[in-house]
Length: 331
Image 1 (cartoon, helix red, strand yellow):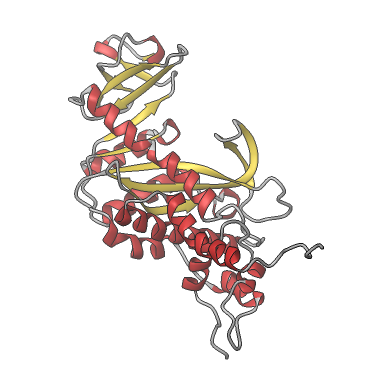
Image 2 (cartoon, helix red, strand yellow):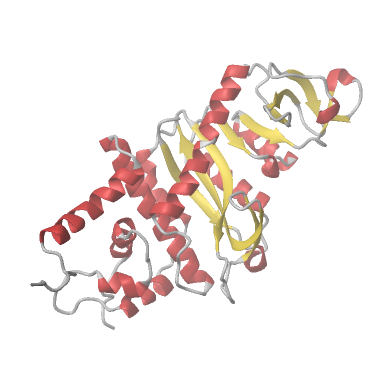
């Protein structure tokens, strides 16, 4: 059997450099001019041949994070597939970008951050039809893997979607602090006065000690937005101060910035494949590409867009030196 002409590193380098089109055809078109340069079939076969999983990402991220300290953030993002026809993994999901239910692939990610640094350490594509796992199952697996990898954290932050009792007790069993949003109908028992939804509990941004139904005491915070909308946050750290809560929530918002980055800079929504295995491999390669980009930006002190532009600028400069498209000279 002939050895493969391209490797995962070849495709990762292509994803980092390419500004828009990320197809196998484009990958072959931009290869250096040399004898026996790989054709587009080599890149297509690569996506179908690889057997990547989240462990491949962790092998590269392990040395870039500090396992003692920092915050882990869990959140999901929908990769838009508005024109998908018979593509595996594509289902209907809620999109925060469109504020509607759209066709796409839901990607659940685990991000480690210290505020100025944020590194992806794990992920799970959501495919309930294919693997029969719920989002809470993936959440459980992500944190179980993080514990086995030796993380000793300041906090784990996540949305109300993942705030089931089973998940909260899992984190408690690890000895970690958790901070999550609660839905307005979540039942708590303030002052042993009986169960009631959090919307009916007298509290404020300073926090109030209540007993969560089915679990231990928690500190409940009520946040009122400028438009009058109320949100409730809760933590198993009974001594958590409002400033600490604000700091951790600020860390958690970095994952939204990260989700925009992987879509705009590494083409994670542009896979030109249909089968589930190729889709999973493409997502894995995009995340590993972004890991390299983030590491460079942190070390060099530049933004993601500045780093991406630095790749394109030499090509623009070369074109300006010798323009290819000109009009014929006139008398």
